Every structure is written in C-alpha cells, then in structure tokens.
Image 1 (tube, rainbow, N blue to C red):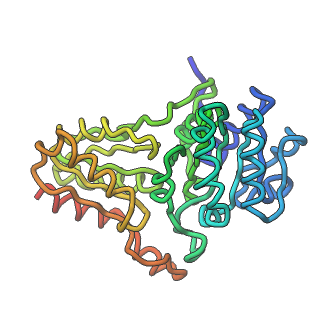
Image 2 (image 1 turned 180 degrees about the vertical axis):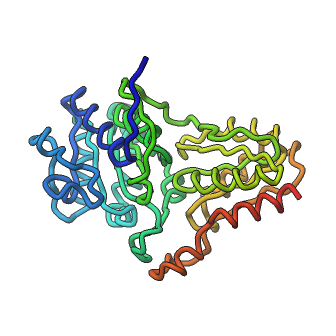
Length: 327
C-alpha cells in the first residue's frame, strides 16, 4: 500500500521539481530570487542546497532569462522558469507569443522547446492591479503553448511532473492563495496527464466547469446547494490548453445545465471558449436553460480588500447563479 502525506500546495510543487531534477540532469530551475531567498512565495525553499549548480538566480529581466531558457530548451535542456507574478509575463510577451510556441513549427519539427514557465497567478492577497491578474485566456489564444492551472496539491505535483517531461512549452499557473492549502499526496511516483479534466464532485442537476482556486469555491457552493436538494457536478479542468472538452460535453448531456466559473474577468475569459464548445457540440440540444458564465467584474483588481472581494465570484454568487440556471 502506498504511503500518503498531507502536504501544502507549495510543497507539492517543490517535490515535483526536486524529483524531476534528480531523475533528469537536464532539468534546472531559474528565476528571480529562487535561490537563497527561496522565491517570492517560498516555493523553492532550500532547493539551492540540493542542486547548487542547477538553481540559478537571474537578473531582473524576464525577457532576458525567459529567452535564455528557450535557448537552453532548444539545445536539449529542460528549464523550469519561475516568474514572480503572472502579470510580469507582459515583460517577456515576445518570448511567449513569438518564440517559444512557434519554433517547433517554424523549423519543421526539427527542434522542440521543452520548457515550463511557473508563475503565481490570481488575486486575493491585496496586491492590487499589477500583481493580481488572471491572464490565462491570453495564453490559451497562442497555438503551441500548453496551459495548466492545478487546484490541489495532488494535482499540482502530478501535473507539474508531466509538464516538465513534455516536449512543448508549458505555462503552469499557481494561484497564490493555494500555496498554503493542504492535501493528500502519495509518496509513490505518479503523474497526471495534461489535457485530462477531473470530476471533483459528481452531480445530476447542473454542471459547474471551473479550475484553480475557484474549484474550492464551487465545491463549497455545491455543498450548500445539496442541502437545498440541488445536485451539482463540479468539473475541474486542470488543463486549459489542451482542454478536455469531452468531459464537459458528457456532463452537460447528463445534467442539462451548465455554469462556468473563473476568477479572470468575464469579458474575453476562457469561459467564452467553454461556452462555445458546448454550443457547437451535441450537448447544446440537451440544454434546458442558457449557458451561464460567472467571472470577475471587468475592472482592474482593487487594492482595497473589501473592493477586491467584491469583484470576484464567491460562494454566494455561485449558488445564486446555479439557482437561476436550474430554477
């Protein structure tokens, strides 16, 4: 029988990196303050002691060190790049838009870019407009990238190990308020395939499709709704690109209702792509109500904790949206 431990999300991410670095000498970590300082959120704690030659503190130049990682990946290394906040991806946008995702195709498949870019995403910490964004929809618009958003320690470890072994550039978004959450993670070796959703809670009356931190909000809302006699199925996408659209379609065919929930702003969010996928599938003919989306308000994230909380989906808003959907 496999031994299991309760560890934090941050520990799960660190374990995945350490295990893969021990398994493959070509894996290395680079980023701002990932060494002695342990990373902005303490995720890389003491890794520099285990791998003194493969944990590299970089200058404050995202465009520079992400470009360096792309070059290393093309030459056969498997870099893991940490960017402190996902907002800072804008500084290296050319690397993520025009370089890493396109090189395999532009060189006729003769080169690959096996690189993982890890970054803290989302809001809830009072970090205001420039350190709190959820930019996954922008990333999902770029062919050649893979985009992963785990919600639990178990998923974070298994998905990160798969991402590191993948021969494509993978963006790994870690919602910063999840770092201290805990979950059961087996000590045995395991991976979770990219592109496979997880039904976190089965149900029959309404499908909620979500990912990341919102998965926990949706599960708590589902518990509340269950006491009212409404059975909600919660699908955690885990990977946004590629997306497990079949899991969504099959669930909607069963429940005949769908609510899409994400922390990112509603306009232009990934919820629109999910909705279109349902509308274009056979599940559309099973629907008993319109497809419904719930995202953040279309505003930069406020610094005020009260205002910040107000712009986000929460359990009450999710419950209200489900009641409207099935009512």
